[in-house]
Amino acid sequence: MLSRRLRRRLRDPALRELPFLYLEVAEFVESRSRVHDALQSVFFLISQTSEEQAEWWRDHDILLPEVRKGIIEIIQKLGLMEELGRGIRGIKLRVMGSRPLITADPKIVEAVFESPDLRRRALARANAIVSAFGLQRLRIENAARSSSRVETSVKRARPSGIRLTELDASRVKAMLERRDRMHDIAAWFSVNSGRIAEVKSGERHASAPQASREELDPPGPPGRIARIALRALEDISQVLRESDGIERAHEIISRAFDDIRRVGE
Image (cartoon, rainbow, N blue to C red; front, side):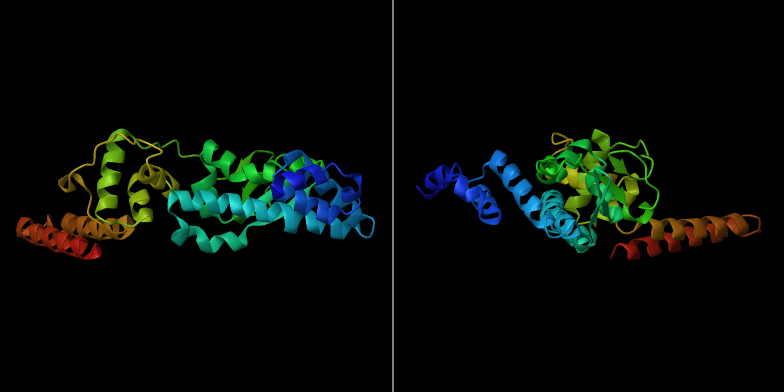
């Protein structure tokens, strides 16, 4: 009932003389065309006093909150809030000419914006209103390289080209079941945590069966495990030149496996 009455009020020219109230009513009844009109009216009103203040309101009170909300929705859906949530406050926005530019933590860019579908969904809220200010669609940059501006939808490292196969996804599911940390799993497959989260949520390879534990790599950070293995190989290479080398090599291998098992504990 209230919504219908407010929709009728939106047609009242007197309401448009009160831009901030006009915007609140338009947002309440979720009228996209009226929201656009109201945003323009508020921006124009503020700019009569200060263009700088109007741009600050546009960037930090309107666009940036919508960007953050959209990214939070995707991160929550991927189950990565614990890992990436602290980076939300570091998301920044600036407008260069008519192009709004978002800079974010490299981990957020990698997890959320590598996939075109996730990128579209994350920026949908903000992209729905940028045209009200005569701006182009948003693009995003890795904050670590924000000084290097490239005209592209997303600024990120060159894609590795590595994609999880169905067999990989089967192992990922088993590792998740084993309660491995997501970034450790991602490191084993040389992908980012966002791809692991997509397998977890069922967005990718939903039909892949879960592998048995016997097929899995040992739990724990792959980097630490690799260092143990490399040191063992170096030691084995040296002792094999000696007369009792084979026996000592077996001892080194046994000790290395014990160390690797402790990494995952």
